[in-house]
Length: 146
Image 1 (cartoon, rainbow, N blue to C red):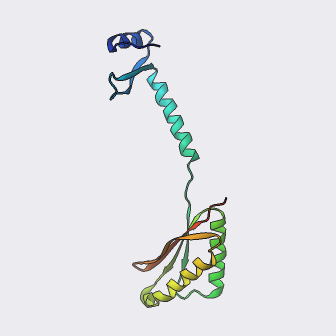
Image 2: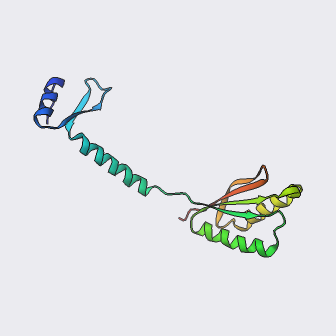
Image 3: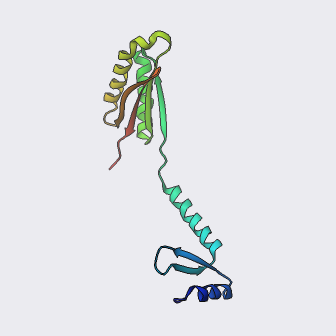
């Protein structure tokens, strides 16, 4: 369109029935553009929505164990964990200690470390087993495919 002083630019915008939008206020002189502001906002919203749709959504799946989970239950839950990691979801495995079972926290940690070791080829440990209240939690993230 051209370079105009601010008063002429405003008059030109009114003449074209458009808006004078300040693009870069810190520049000397400030940079303005004559455009339809509502259309500009609409286009910007559309771009933001498209970027948001392309962003990867992180899914976290949980698996709960008891401190004395037997082998059959453990294997069953491990198969579910494998499926979750293959699908690309993060895994939150935790041991829940009920009542006085907190005295078996070493068994809970051994159980989680065993799970981490057996799922080593599918995912890497993001957070080692950590006791928080009555729960011992561990996070495993899926390995990225190359």
